[in-house]
Image 1 (cartoon, one colour):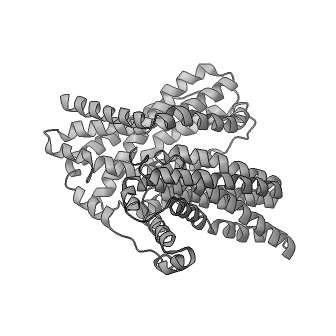
Image 2: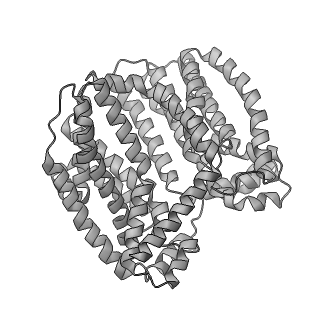
Image 3: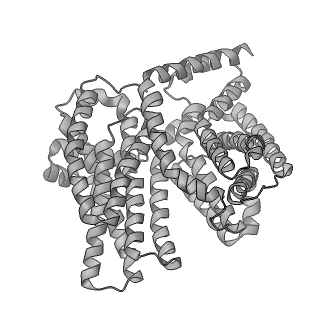
Length: 492
């Protein structure tokens, strides 16, 4: 027990150090960004609370919730790997201390639950707002205790079980896991009865989240079943026993396997290998930096890469679905999908900067200027999201009465939306370097706001964009200079 207490104590000190190093981001900039997000989201929350949205069918909401759970598992897999197998990390020093695997596992589970606190806070706030607007305040503590808390507990255990079993079975590559989850989603869609057994480990949390959706979408009081909570807790206990047994048996012996998997290099396509194209076009310094960033991306430096590509694909699919099932103008649907998909891909720039912060000493030892630093991220965001407007245009062609004039104008609009979103995200990616989650929210508000204006009146949005970029370039230069000179940014 003393071992667990000491581990938690020093982990808590680490958290306090991170809070102290990011006081401005957490207590000044963070609430400002979240306040703007609240103002943007409250109309939709209000509409949901009064029951104005049509209820989705049970099969559809089961599929959507299953996809969300799989995305939660994939998004955290890199961090869970580092927690369970701390190779070349400070936690690896605990291996030489007389600490039993059981206490190590319990501390791991506690901090995994702590890492899921942002999701807990989001669900709790959304539930409070919906119930308050719908005047169902009596359900707020009930939902928190019977749905949200058991869901967070089971999610944390699932994250640990996934990594431990995947590592032991030598299937820890993110590509294989993505294919595996995609197969489960397809089975869920086409063969829901078979998927009931295949998705048995997530049944508890899925039933809870489905129940949470119906409690939000129905204007009247929703009757909660205690059996769903008991099912989730029972599955959590079973998964916890499996995870503890697997961790005690394999956590040490599987570290060599994990190290080999993480060290394995992936080859890029011929387009990226031909680095002289970028070098001749943009210069040797900018071309080399871009090639490095693209190489890291296609080697999947983080699970965020999978999430970005997954969301981009979802938004492109939604273009076809919304266009065929609604009467909205196709050009607005195509531009909206392009804006969201472009942001999904270009938002990797803040995550990549966070990944590169510990290696900034390499930049400082080279003749890299502030202009080179922010320009590389600007071009990175634009190049990575460049296929989006082309794909949106090709998907729109069969859905529109095509003429040369309206086709070219639609392509111009899509390219303009892509340029606005990608360039603004790229130029603002240095703004909150150590906090990519806040940076993504901040860049989303800035880029999508101008994109919405451009969709409504393209020429006015273009004027606002050109004026804003002139100011943002100066700001980006100052931020890059601060990072490159070492005044800020190497630590969390």
